Length: 472
Image 1 (tube, rainbow, N blue to C red):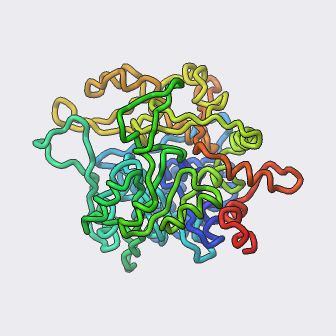
Image 2 (cartoon, rainbow, N blue to C red; image 1 turned 180 degrees about the horizontal axis):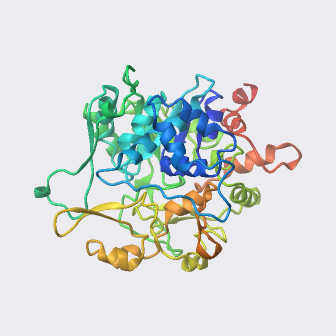
Image 3 (cartoon, rainbow, N blue to C red; image 1 turned 45 degrees about the horizontal axis):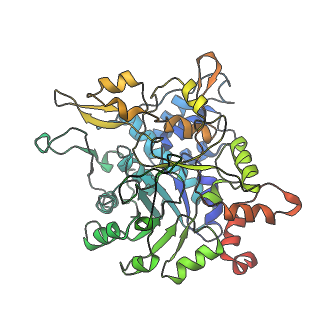
């Protein structure tokens, strides 16, 4: 539920009910910088940064990005440096501090559990981001969108205050190129005289029993638990396990091979949570009766009052949900990552072909850039959503890879209310995502007194737990 949809407010609200509230860790360095440029009107980011334990970092960040009272509405956001295999210290500090601040605010004033979610596909910030979250005492780290086999060792190293490295896939590299990795030594950033941070639990997000069994079988890759995400879940999905097929509307076809039986996951022997169309009391009961610890819910929380989605887009989706008319498409081309991506088909968003065609292609945030090997052996970076000519020139990128690709970086920032303003009064349009099952959302709206068109995070938890939750 990134970027900033599952933010600290939502995670805190869920955690206060006794459940695991999870913040999105995607692009938090950008989110923090833009919150500060909007004036940080509630003062929360400055309060969190004031508790950051490394002297001088918060002051440097505020000098660079904070705008008292907020920037002019017509002015663009100040850019943030982009990650590479050798990120600058300023970017490293911003990433560490931004992840610290998000978890700090989610945990502030209570002892409920808080987790943070990362995407393996967005790998360059991971060591810095995890360290910042750990400095704030995060309880769980979750990771999907790729194989998370490297994370247990990375978290062990950070908790031991030891140098760590995360292998990075460089397109076009060969075995003779040597191992590419993002390297991080926490001792260069560690607070003086402070014990290393506590190691959080690690929950691997998987879409198959096969991957879960492989991770659990090796002590070096064994997580503390699993989240099993079905193809009905919002955001990025795993590709179908069978041959690639499209239906009459151009959507990917999933079949029985893509359905994970909770009873099969029980045999792996680790705690697990089911996700994707489990966001109802019946879904919870179905999962738990088959051996699951519980369920992970996204869509119902994404559209509650505390979520970070911009109010206009939240309202429009809720109006459609109340009528049972939310059109969600599993698009194989939208995401530059190559993973299928769920997109709500709303006019005025990047799902609208006219809006997509009118947008000038650019890649100025670079969160989804991938490394590639240049002819001289050095490493460059490219994104299929960047200008086509630029992509072709980046390591002979194939033009076919660019067709239909949306700029998720700018689109998801816009969905959370951080849309970039550009020349000629152009504002970046959003990308809105959701799962395919709005049963829970419709029921929560129906229960609101006086036909009120919103609901709160605590209402979602009470609904999911049934009468017991409502009594609590």
